Image (cartoon, rainbow, N blue to C red):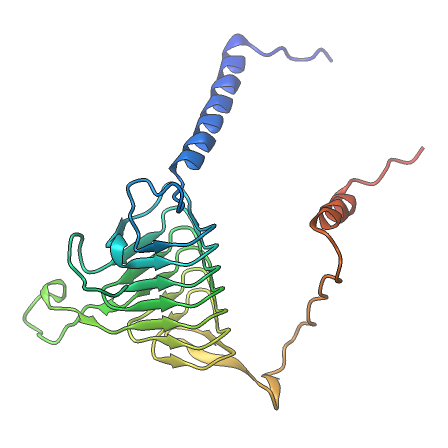
Length: 248
């Protein structure tokens, strides 16, 4: 069967598509924010190796936002300090991210009062963290017109926050807490706990005496042996996914 020849219009469309993708990659690289290239953003601190992907979400109150080293802030992530831009929030930071924090695409961290995220916390996409909540005390006034309540939020080091989770004002998460996707968290969560649901409750916890309770249903992952290089891991992955050789 004869091969179909590409028409001039199809060739032009492919070239245009490649140009658009190449241009967008250039824009993403140029628009990323780092300590060396902060653009219009003037954070109170931005650590070495930290990068905010482009396009950024809403960002204001930067002088009161401190970002640690080697943080990865995904596209369209909102970071705000204070209830609105151009406020004087005093001498101390309001929103603090530790070292190695990862905030997934589309997440929001709203710090009208203190929000602290510890080292090596990983957030899935579209996580919402806020230190402010609407009040509804007066039944005769629209909820949106009533003065909100604020309460500091603290997320301990090593936590994993699943996709779409909501962390409400006053939440205090301990070390290495796992928050299930879609959970709504308020109040105290102890170290080494797994919480799920809305409102979230502890569904699994760890202690030195009893280990994980209820017991884990899956075996522990096999660690990478010492001395294995990244290049060897890449080569192994390529070998494992390569199609089998066809039989003679």
